Image 1 (cartoon, rainbow, N blue to C red):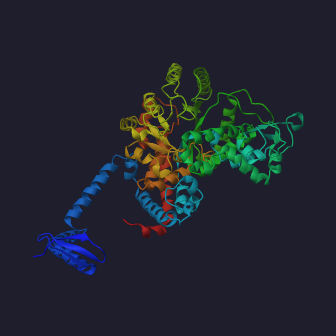
Image 2: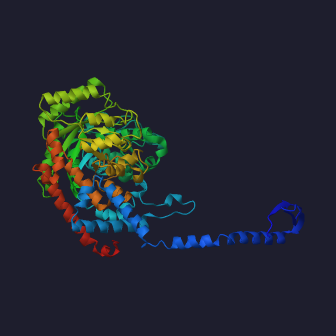
Image 3: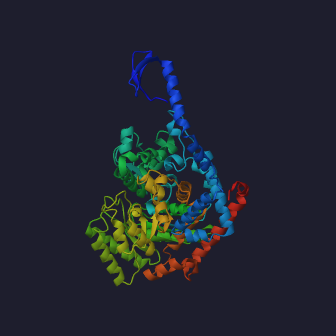
Length: 621
């Protein structure tokens, strides 16, 4: 009979082993103890061998062809398919043509190949900044994106409509600064000299036009980087560039720091939302002043119209104010007091562009009047009156109303309710269709006053909402936004740069789509937020790159949504909902343009299949 033993420590190299049954204790060498313990453990294992053999045979008998495994796979497939029925993009994707399905498979294969072979690059010790991964922060990924095949595909895609973009940041500022430098009479003023790193960082800049340098005592040929520069001195912009250390290109690089969020600022998510918004809002004054001279804004419009068409954008709804006169006519030094002047300039340039062969691809532009949400009651009501006047003067141009600026620190829709109700009643009395397209839910909050704007936007019948970042936290609102056909104008790169999401992988758009909420992709303020492009390709790329459930079909659904929810013409709420629901089966302008977009989509899918035919062999069915 095998005895159980208890081991008591003794002086090395011996242990005291005592029998539990006879209470006898003997001293044995270490090697004897080891042998005894091995024998004991082996004897115990032997008694379990039959059970282990039975278990082993059962596990290894479960092959992929086993009925139990097949039943699990069947239930799994059915469950996933059932969930996809709830997705907002389900209808579009379930009706993809054979060529579109083939294009989606090819794009999926290319995307996965580049994830595995281009994006997933581990870095070595003390080289962590070189780490690369799919879906990384846009500021890090941006220099790499244009070298990918997926970018070549996305940049060719027909994007449909751009529904959320602010007029002061529509075109990359490098282009605008070059226009300024090539325009006679432009001067730059600074709040202080920029001779040191600190003073350059703190200085504010503004641009204006002076028709006669000799007649203006404030004009002087003194470099703004000189310690002798006097605040407010107007320096001819050509001289400022030539005298700047490094010349014109270095001067433009310096100007860019005043009108755009830098890469280092983008990466500092640890400093929070308010800090980046202070930098963001500081960009608008110098950016706006760069576009206050008529010849400059005319060239800017032509450049951005071309850029939109090049990027596959066919319709645009600009958010823009206009309650104060800022545009200076050509050859003059002061703004035209007529509030309609800048509108006539915009329409004139738009009509010129649309008369060209290329311009025929741009269906048009409308404006959502945007007031500052921080305005007090009297100032806001005054601006609302001007918005109504502009609508009376240009009924086809002005399409809706919004309030803008940082939602977290501005007045809430609840606080603005008296003014907004006045606006609704006033426009209804005038038999005017002037719907709301509110910014709402652009916040990290959950239950705070900014988050609650989502409830007010719903009750005010906002036809679309801007950002809607916190919407996914509200199951009831998700249902009601879906039922009431309220679309979310999603701005993925903007949300990342302004520190709501650290990267595309943390964006809530997948939750919105999965719950059936209509969404479309927009770029918000691309010139300020680091995209350096007027189009939508970077935002589209981030979405398809970031999420496996999107694919080319999902990207197509987002583009089609942008057309379905475009406010092409004034409509009653009932007609608006009807045309959204009917889609291509309707009879109005929306149905016609959806059909035009569909033709572009099919041609695009055919191009993918032909251009990347060699990828067919890599597709796994």
